Image (cartoon, rainbow, N blue to C red; front, top):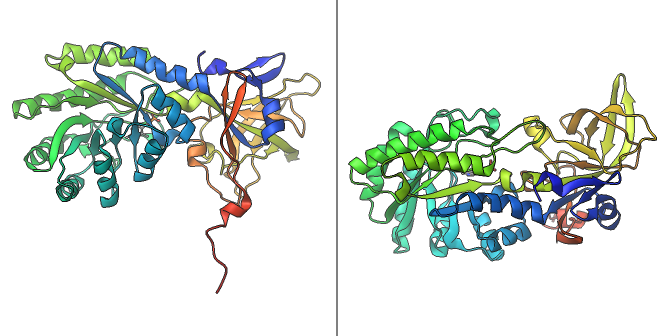
Length: 422
Ligand SMILES: *Cc1c(COP(=O)(O)O)cnc(C)c1O
């Protein structure tokens, strides 16, 4: 089952695998995040399949969706994990994941996070600055350990994505500038408690073409050669994540097309096939495996504009407010008894930025259910409690079974840590 076919209509009623979304709403309420287990497993398997016969580690970038059940099912499928905080490491451990398959990324690792990751035995630290390298060396010395390290190099390629999710340009905060990398590697190689293992990059997110990956690969291979000439041998090359998905009409390469192109580039290099390869995909594993199920509270018209006010909001799904991102909107019941009109789909939060979709043709009435599509990545993971809105329930569908994988928050839990005046 591919991801798009995990959510489809049967007799005008939208299903997640073998369960009607209308039944899910009746049982569990709205708003609700609904994920398809097989869609996640299928997407992950396509990366694994593309790596067959190679020394490769396919990691799931936890920040895209860090629910324990999703971590657990990917861990069982053999995934490694790309983490960006000590909290994410604790999630991997709590879900039964293997710390020796964990890559620790991020520009601001604290000493405490470094200690925890060293003690847990993560596979590699992707180091993003010289200061971080020196700090890691000190922390590793205090634990009498050597820290396995890749430098995350900023290859200065344009991934052609939204400015907020592009990370591989010179002016981003991410990575070590390509022209400085050689010097930092030399320093790293001389540090007693650092073990140089590899080289890493991550050039952005929602990338819909192979070309920026190949451009980044060429930049990394240049450095690999320069390091080789210097006597610094690497064990792996980490190409990061960032593969896009179809939200609307994008046409990203398949996992297989992307990885084959990268492997071809690698195999053309004289020592390329010697290196292990790591990947860190988030969105492309879970993005189209989830929807946000919501109910229409009111339909209203202000001047020329019609609004469908729903019970999900920017606090549940921040991407439209943050990036003006497009999400498909699917009526859970296809009806022909009302006329389709163009609506802005908005939430109840007191911000004009609180919209989920704009100018969509929908045949709906008050009380109808909508599925906001492609909400499996950076949906619940970015949700907040703004306006004292409890975060939505998360549900995992597996065939005809529905499992609650995170309960809906209660209002009481939202202020449980707050204290009244003394
Ligand atoms: C966010 C992130 C990823 C995953 O990006 P996707 O676009 O979700 O695939 C991978 N690596 C790093 C370092 C990241 O910050």
